[in-house]
Image (tube, rainbow, N blue to C red; front, side, top):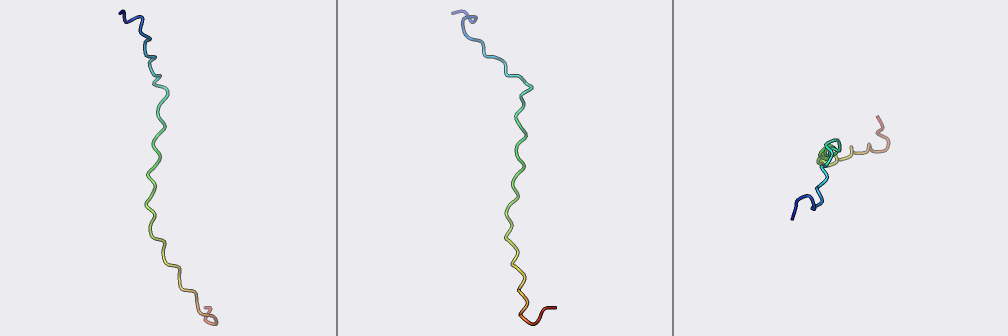
Length: 44
């Protein structure tokens, strides 16, 4: 079998570069507890 009969693999163009990997997602920090609502009549 001659190698010419085999379909030659088309060289992948180097211009097609893989897109940069997405930035790592920041770990979701625990949401800070909401500030206690001021009691009615104590609005500063």
